[in-house]
Length: 156
Image (cartoon, rainbow, N blue to C red; front, side):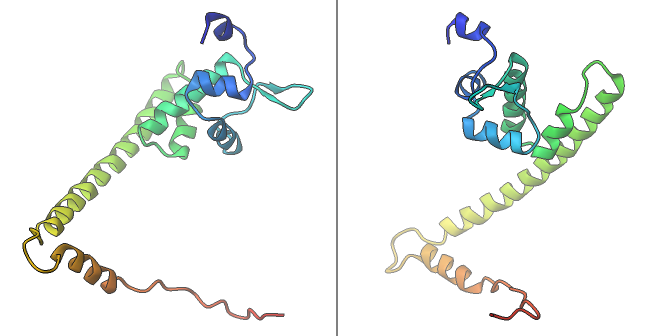
């Protein structure tokens, strides 16, 4: 981007996408989720974004890259960096997210162990692949999904 483009707000969605690293589709999604509202609209109904909007998109992108949920991002966006009380709220939000990350790490370690055990079932020297055999056996052992029967529904 040239310095002329960087200095010329308001931006159309394609420019805001290029400046923020967030796709136009995601920008629309974040608007729908009330994480962002466009700076305004032109006579042609095109959305326009300010430098502040581009910063907010970068902030959202950063939080999402840290695997934060939309609700966690929404919480952090609602905080004011000048209010001391908001610091405690930010810490609580990050502590909650850290707990989620730690739980996910434990799940991933279990998954790694299970995948390694599955891989080790077959060294390729037998007539059949015991890894694929084990995968088929696990697929057969999966419980059937339970679908509630809609009471009182009739075809008319």
